Image: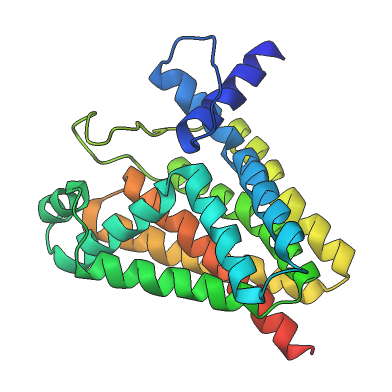
Length: 258
């Protein structure tokens, strides 16, 4: 149990800005084993966003409430995943060879593709969430944060890490996960979504899983075709796209049944 707790703290340390103390010395193997808790990290981010929505939902305009919740999400992760999404937009938008794509993604500067992609992504989140009733918005956040991170974990399971230089980013990433660890990640990732679906008794929400799967397959195919696998930026991009797709599905279904 103590070992698993240390692995969980390792996941929190690498994927958030939250101050934690890990007693075990860092090793790539330890980070790989901690990956199964990435969806559980999503629970924490979701709770932070939930607290903001609960605190401001009745005293502030809806757009401001959603904006503050998104700001808390970005702050608590250090924009780790958003940065990956922007880098992937720049790399795949401006590169035509594997070497050039990886070179662009490694560049710390943001380009036109990254800027526009990130702007549209954040706009999609903002509009989708602010269109939901406060109660449904809270449930959407709780479902989306773990599930989107599990979606990124599946990429680690099915594809190969393609960067040759281990120092390409200030934060290392996991480069492998076993089937057993994938199952654990799946439990943490899917449980909140299933609970929300049952609670709302809206089984039309299950279409969200299909939408997320389609987005995941498309991005996986794109990565495989152009660079032969994934990078840390790709994982962040998958998480962001999956999160946005989940919010969009909640928004569309809520609008349909209004």
